[in-house]
Amino acid sequence: MAVSVRDVAAAAGVSVGTVSNVMNQPDKVAAATVERVQAVIAELGFVRNDAARQLRAGRSRSIGLIVPDAGNPFFADVARGAEARADDDTLAVLLGNSDESPSREDNYLDLFREQRVNGVLITPASDDIEKLVRVQAAGIPVVLVDREVPGSTFCSVSVDDVEGGFLAAQHLLQIGRRRLAFVGGPGAIAQVAHRLEGARRAVDEVPGATLEVISMPALTVLHGRAAGEEIAARAVAHRPDAVFAANDLLAVGLLQALTMFRTLRVPEDIALVGYDDIDFATATVVPLTSVRQPAQLIGRTAVELLLRSISDPGGDYERRVRFRPELVVRESTAG
Ligand code: RIB
Image (tube, rainbow, N blue to C red; front, side, top):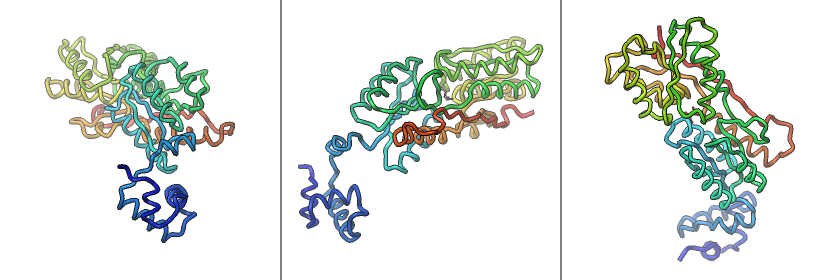
């Protein structure tokens, strides 16, 4: 039999209202009483029934976050930043992994609506934002994370991926490489398309430089390995002398294939740049040059925007925050 708030009140010798105040507004209760009630809560193992509180308050104490790949450390860091900011307002972050699947994304959007979350942070798996318009129309604010959708009214937090792609390719050109390859994922992923666009702009500025595009089914280490195997199997005249990977997971896989299974050297034979600057980028056998995204700051800022949109809907603040990428140079492009 679950312990009720009445059991706690009886055991502590106070009213049910006092127990509620201890849980929700402890500053209104004498310190000794707070201490006694909290001791009884711990002793009886009471866990409050949030459903009743949600119904009264109209909202749960949570925020929904939907990411396309929970296995990617970049999104784990975004979630960490979001949790840190949410915790300042005693809110929890409920994480959903869409795996780039619009149907999985729909299921999480439905679940978060049922859970009456305060808002939804999402890196959309597709450009179909009509469903997000419907969520917002249902009274649940939406903030786009790592994406922005021109013409939409959503708050968004992103990084200028065109500039990031330009920085990556420009750096490879500046160290003298001319046969570049871009190893990316499905062009439907906007971040990938923008990084490629930036790389193309840099290559177009250098006469004689070329850019080959190698598209993989997904942005994972294994697909990076497969791309690296294919490149390493080529005759030297047909191999790129530099690779820009659309994210660090692809770059880690490429590095494994190029160095561990083959006799190629990075950067001597093939220079390599990744994107995100996840923690692993510094721990690889050849530390990775990468375009850094402030992942935790992106998460924190997304929650901050969400809370502002709730507390100050018509307020005068920037609703589309776009951070600038930063090139972090390491051994994979040294010299
Ligand atoms: O989701 C694919 C990539 O886009 C991630 O690695 C991260 O770079 C995001 O911006």
